[in-house]
Length: 403
Image 1 (cartoon, one colour):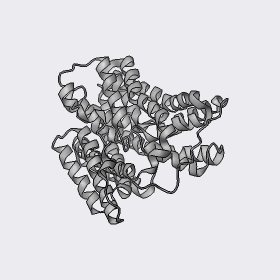
Image 2: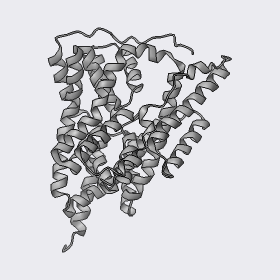
Image 3: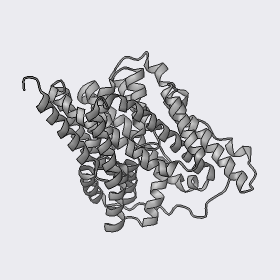
């Protein structure tokens, strides 16, 4: 296996005594970090590299690469990692908690309002306008990521196959890891041959599918009624296996919670996604909303704990071996394969969400206009979510019974 010429420059010995600084900066980011993972990371770079100089620009880029090697929400893992490098183990815990906490509390309040007032027509019309915007946001994310992930016609073909297999009902975990490994190993082998290097089969000896691939969620979930324990384990699995983007979570949510378990409807899933987009912080706080809808306050806390707990563990585990993991060309190729599969899953979910959200000409217009604005002007998605909500409420006010 080939090695890169440059190793990560991430510090290995975090300082101590700077915990208050970590708490303050990540609490503020937790309340103000709108716009999705890319925006979160940009805000962290401005704060920690340019203003506070916690790490150098090169170290920050290395950290992004390491965060992309492990499952989970990248921006949350960056918060956890930066907290660790600034204040050690207490910083690891509190950096992540302070970034996640504000979004969780906001989503929890919205979930309570949704459950309490969700049956009112006004709330239904509000989400009527928001859901097409969610479709546009996911479409724009796919469009942006595709320019980086789909490098060559073979990548487009592989992604299209993943989309087709997902829509035919193939297990999401098998697609994500299985297709990722097949695509990644093939790409690595082609690269080796193109550069004249022999392919050593021993390089693949230690390559095994992660444990969750052996689990078929549908087979297990179909015989498991709702319980708080099952809810926690389901979201713990999500946090353990999801690569690529917070939007890939949508494929897992729909497969497990809508199709296999029947705990949610497609409409409720769209509402949960909309709330996750409307609030600051990680998209994964969608778990808080779903947990509350299914199991009240205990469900919200357990779902949130389950989906974020693996990120803390992965950051703690990967830091000592990060330099060695980044050296191998095979690891890089495998991650490329996983990203292609993840983008294919996102596209499949987009098709299914659109079927539920785009129900008449007005919703199609809302989605098209929102997508055009996102692509052309790159505005913060929270403003579009708010605009969609206003349109929904106005339509309710105009067409309400008795008016």
